[in-house]
Each structure stands twice: as C-alpha cells, then as structure tokens.
Amino acid sequence: MSQRVQAAVFDGKGGCEIREFPMPSPPRGGAVLKVAASGMCGSDVAQFHGHKHVPGEVSPVVPGHEIVGTIHEITPEAAADWGVEAGDLVCVSEVVSCGRCKGCMSGGLCGNIRVYGYTFPADANGGPWGGYGQYMGLLPGSQVMKAPPGLTPAELTVFEPLANALNWIDMLRVVPGDRVVVQGPGHQGLLCAAAALAYGAAQVIVTGAAGDGLRLRTARELGAHDTVDASETDVIETVAELTKGDMADVVLDVSPSPHTTTAALELARVGGRVGLAGLKGLTPDPELVTDLIVLKMLRVVGCAGPTRASMLQSVRLLGDRPDIARVMAGEHVSLETVEYGLDLLQRRVPGQDTVHVTLVH
Ligand SMILES: [Zn+2]
Ligand SMILES: [Zn+2]
Image (cartoon, rainbow, N blue to C red):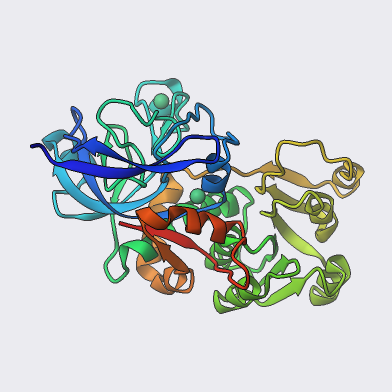
C-alpha cells in the first residue's frame, strides 16, 4: 500500500478534522516538503471561522502559512532554482508567483499569486498544500530558503511574520534614530518592534491593553525601550512624556481593536508616517478623524504581507539574531491539539497566554 500522510483541514464553518492524503509526489519543476513546523496566528483563527481576507482564499482548506520543513524529494529544476537539495531544512514563503505576469517580469508583486494554506482547496490534486499537512507539495514559483543553523523548526516559523514586519518597517522608511510606536503586542506587533530595532530605531514603544502583561514583558525582552498599558494610563499622554513632547516619527497599528486607528494618527508627529496593519473586521470606523492626517500632513501606508526581498531579509536576520526567534518561541501544539492552539490564540484558555503558537508535526 502506498504511504498515507495526515493533514488538518478547516471546513470554514468552525470545524477542524484530520484527513488522510496520498503521499504527494513532486509536481513538475517542484518538490515535496516534509513539514516540521507551521506557525499559527490570528489569520488561522479567522480561517477557522470562515472569515476570508486573503484574495482567492477557499475552504475547506489545509491551512498553514508559516512553513518550515525538510526537502523530502526535489526535481532538478527546483533544486537549481532554489539552491537547495533533499535533506535541507528550509523556510517556505506562502506566496507562489506565476513567473509570467507584468509584476513578476518586473521583479515586483505577482498579479496571479497563489498562497499555500489559503488558495488551494483541500481536495486539490497533489496536496496537501499547507503547513498543517505532514507533507506538502511545493510548486515552481515558490520561494524556498535554506534555514540558518542553530534554531529549531518551531523557532524558525517566525520568519514569516518577521518578513511581514520587515516589509512594513521598510515601507514606513524607518531610519536609525527614529522613534517608533507599535500598537498591539500580538506576535506580529512584537516582531514589528524587533524589526524597527533592527532598522536602528532609537526608541521603540509598544502599547497594549488589559491582559497584555506577558506580551509587553516580551516586547521589553526583544529590546523595546518602553511599554504602555492602555488600561492603566492614557497612551497619548504617556507617549508624549516618553518622547519629551516630540511624539513618534513612525506609528504602526497592528491591533485588531477598532479604537486604535485614530490614536495612531494622534501618536504621530507632524509629518510622521503611520502604517495600518491590524485588520478591524472589514467594518467602518465611526471614530476615525481624518483631519488629523490632513493637518499633520501624515503619510499613511496600508501594510499587508511580505515581499520576496523581505522574506530573504527575515531569514538572514534570524541567522544573525537567533535570540529574536527564541524569545518568540511560545507554545507548541500537534495535529491532534490544533483546536487547543486556536483557543490559545483567541485567549480562551483561562489563565493562559502566549506570544506565539506553533503546530509541530
Ligand atoms: Zn500568520
Ligand atoms: Zn506573476
């Protein structure tokens, strides 16, 4: 009998089941990955409940987009293209480019992206196609990067949110000496703080809300200079004090709270840059005061996802700064305990919190 592999499947209606698949074989020009670990985040929670936010997202689906594993089998074309061979531990970007469109030809963003863990139906041929599979197919057009030594696969999974963070910090033109405020100390926000520090920010302030104690402590462990708990003090007054009245050169709102957007505009200095990254459930914001953008001549940037360059930059940064991944290690779950992981992410486990959850196969 041919080998079978297991994968968790989300039905998009709040259900998760383990299904068996035939062992995938390498697609033409691609490879098969033995997945070692797949980081979980708020996007997985949204997917579980069927809230779609990635273009082309489908359900049922094998989720998992923060993917680290070992090359199990590889075609010569993929080996040449990616510079890896069977047995290598690799970080896999979730984005698969078509290689043919205008964006791809000019080295920019692909107009026909497919995304592992999101846009491949669970029953699509050749799968599983997400990190919740014990094995998964890798297509040509994937970005596959050799992992730096010294970190476990679970620790390495932060390369994906760190690649987002580095892209956003780059888009916001953070330069040495900048004062940066990050709102929302989830794992994505914490990695934004780490990325700002890597770019030489002179002062990084992370703000959170009631119950964020562990997360704000982790922000300081990552090197953030100050943390502010909005349930205890007025964030805008406190940031004014901490910056001696200058306010922030750059504010990055990574919070899902609907109340942080206008605060972000208030926290920025005149002529400052504001990045909006936290999704607010696609609902209108009745509190938004756009006059602040006008009067303070703010540059407001929408921040979503990584680029190929930020992916490479992230994997390299983890090679130089493995401490970032170690501080962000968090909790591990298995295929059987994925739903516990989702509960942890939704802070539904009484008395428990964590800065990251990783599915380890
Ligand atoms: Zn994620
Ligand atoms: Zn393309």
